[in-house]
Image (cartoon, rainbow, N blue to C red; front, side):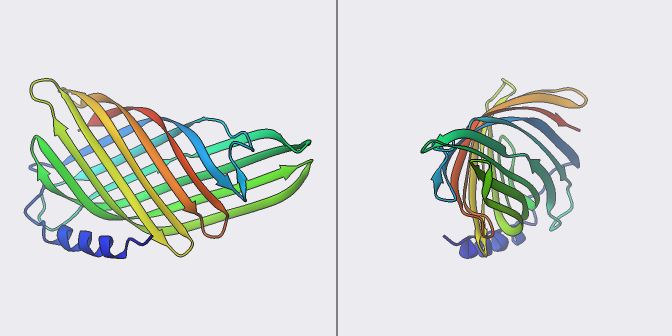
Amino acid sequence: MTYAKSLTAALFLSLSAGTAVADTAGVHMGFGLWQADPDGSLYGYSMDELNYKKSDNNFFYAAIEHPIPLLPNIRLQYNELETKGSSTLITVPATSRTRLNHTDAVAYYELLDNWISFDLGLGLRRYDGASEVVLGGTQVNQDNSDAYLPTLYADANFDLPFTGLSVGGNFQGGSFDDTEFTEYSLRLSYMYDAIPDVGAELGYKRHNLSRLNGFDIDADFAGPYLSLKLSF
């Protein structure tokens, strides 16, 4: 799968959206916990065979928005994604561990900014990855990866009138060299109007990674998340 055409189209739309900017400057922040349930394969072993478990992973993001035409808004985010397993493969004890932490820098435009908001942009993702499988005390597979790839970013949000509630969704995806991923989330949010605005978000996120710069993984990580939010 390639994202070249999508990235080109997104860039054209973003650059043509100079008048779709925020009314005022603002900073939006959030931090939370994602419970990721792994499924798929690693080095030819299924994650069920390796007995990979659900794991709790922290994440954080910050977005800076402004009313300056043509200049994109900026979003930075960091997500942990670590899991491990312990099992027996044909009478041989096996342990395994995988780290797929990732950092994103995204430049985006607000194409809509009222009770319906829609953001579109381009970004760069870095994976800080490592994985190993140990059979009977002997390490049989081990890799480290430091991979960068361009990404497409889209986010939509719909305010529910007079409630403080909103529903929304987010998509990111990209591919480069031997790395390819897609990620989406759906959410229900509540914001309390104060100084600063404070709120919470409950959602579901799914992350698919089919390769990571040479180490053999084809996996989905999916599950609920909960975060706290601040807007200044």
